[in-house]
Amino acid sequence: MLKICADIGGTKTIVGLINEELEIIESHKFETYINNPEQQFTEIINIAKNYLESVEHVNDTILNIAMPGPCDYTQGVFLNPPNLQKYNGFNAGEFITEHSSFKPYFVNDTDAAILAEQRYVSSMTEDFIYLTISTGVGMAYMRNGTLVSGSDGNFGEIGHTIIKDNSDYQCPVCKQYGCVENEISGLAISRKAGLLLNKEVSTREAIEMYNAGKNKQIIQMIEEVIYLTQKLCTNLYSIFNVYNIVLGGGVTQSTLPYKTRIEAYAQKHHLIQNREIVVRISNLDANVLTGLYYVNKNK
Ligand SMILES: [Zn+2]
Image (cartoon, rainbow, N blue to C red):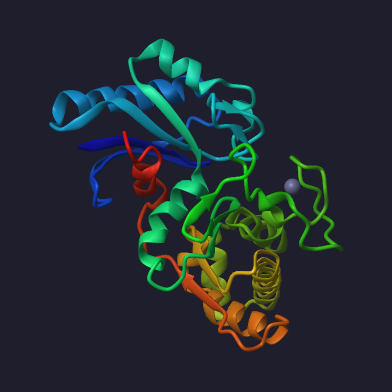
């Protein structure tokens, strides 16, 4: 039986049909309506209804939805997602129930992703951290093969913890200086490059300039981003007592040398020296979307 799953991101949303092999049978991608949650969920419902009419063997009752946190995942209420600030207080659970016959299930996007990653990591270890670096930064934790999602599903909001103590950039969301999301995310790379070059620069362009090796300021800026990421991951290895981190998200799919640099730094500075410390770069497309299949496994 296929399940209808939706991954709401800060930039793009994907609604797809997933089978038990975690394959995407159909998918539809659109720009997230960042200013209009009603329009956003109307679009999701319409795509879902369309799947019911056009594809066979689709579970017609369930709608699994991944939302960037923090949220009340029991009811489907957005609390304060940094990249979807207009959604604060919006009750997606109520909206879906009022406008369709679907029963919605909500989950943190990184929790969905780690469920998909687990299939590929489980032969190596049952204890690992998933860290995603894309528009924002998020994490999830698998302990002894079981997802740890925190007291209310908001485990791992690491984006607004402090990584750089002398930063002069104040986060508009948490109001602190030097939080993870504003120092090492894709948005942060693009913002920092824009300031240095005094024009709009995309994350991809900044990384290309780093690779070209000509602009000293850009090289220095990205070197610092990688250095801060090394420190962040070393903290995670120690705090959670894991030896494996899976890195996902668009920025980690680039040519930046995350794996070698993080492994070397953590291996050097971790107090436990007789264990190998491993970074695996995810090679799963759409791990949030496919991992949603497992959200209510028995239904
Ligand atoms: Zn912040």
